[in-house]
Length: 187
Image (cartoon, rainbow, N blue to C red; front, side, top):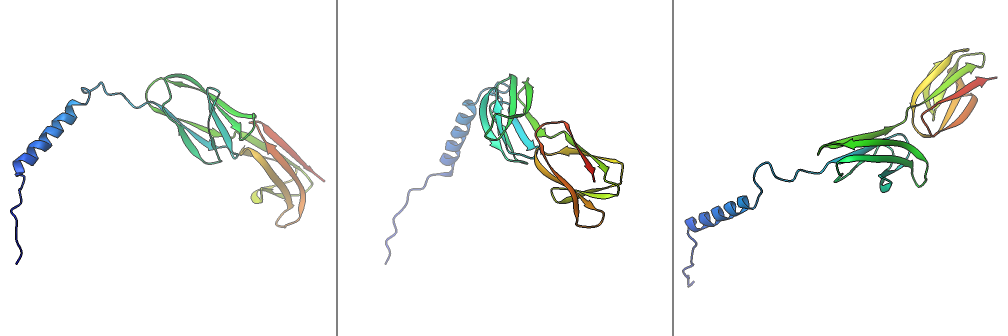
């Protein structure tokens, strides 16, 4: 035979009172409405330039980003801040930007290339132009092709006979700044 003991039970009202006291205590610990500290501003840095970058703010290294990555600098103080993107593991400045942070808000700095490539066909026949192995355009003789927003880094550019696989000219272009690079194809 099982011997049952009478268990003490906590009345429902006692639990409700304790929960009410805890709720009041947590409310009283908070600041009055409108005086809570607001979240500090942050700057999201997006790398869309084609190469890995070291990111600096006010001359202090923050982090590195591979191409197409992004990350945020947290708890940024109000005021002017110098943002710099350098080629990873070098002192080569790729881009800089002065950010004026005036309120507690999230800001974004997108780093991209504005470099262009001007290709002139003086070969004597229409050519197919390839960049890094991908077809870009057909280019008739004695005309120019302007390719915009070339990512930073090295790129192999080839001219092939139209519709074929024979490379008649090629060059490697190391894009390191926002300028117009030129390539003239001749026989």
